Length: 279
Image (cartoon, rainbow, N blue to C red; front, side, top):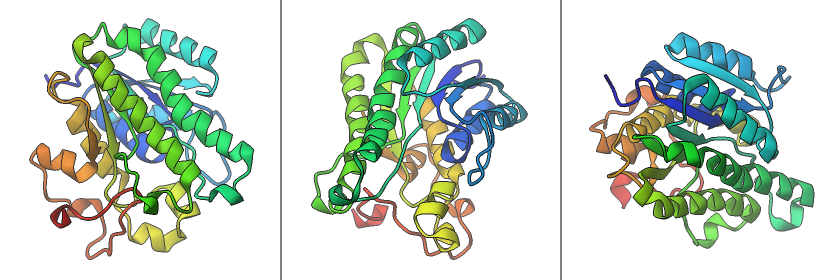
């Protein structure tokens, strides 16, 4: 029996893209996955709803619980966590996946757009993690995994989109802080970020359409990296800000060809300084 067999995952977002790929990956290992998201009805520009995600999770081999809700509402998050515990008996893994993105400079961003990123990305990570924490402390395989980048003060990652950088780095700081706070309680906390841009609706809509997709890896690389991290012993894997290919390499997976088109001119993601052999 694998380490994820019979485990319960509580995930923010997950209707599509990287979050759904992670949910399906964990479900394929026998995990039950509860996802909280707002997508009760189809969006004209975005594929999938929380209900189609639940179908995909079950098709992958796991049990699913679709929880309609907004992670900006701490009361709804608390109720969703309790519903997950009532349904599956506890929570072993918390995945902070939900995120809002706007790559605008300070002078070009409306306050309400700043608030949206701050509330979903950083505050949402805080609310979801805090709500799950009492149940994680009762697990013998407790993990928090946050989709956020390694910390950096390099001006090139601040110029042009500092508000987004603040929101994403805030997610990382909360997660690394949790790792320090909860180590004695057996709760691991790590971050995960892709080396390259990933073929998602956000990349297609915001970062360059079909040309950007051609230079992307598939969401499955992040999902497989997440699976590798979450299968590890919480006592020996905590306090890290992983890049996806680094997490896979630690698990002995170095052939990444299946995650992109043959010969693709892959594009590095933001907050990533180079390729592994460049140091």
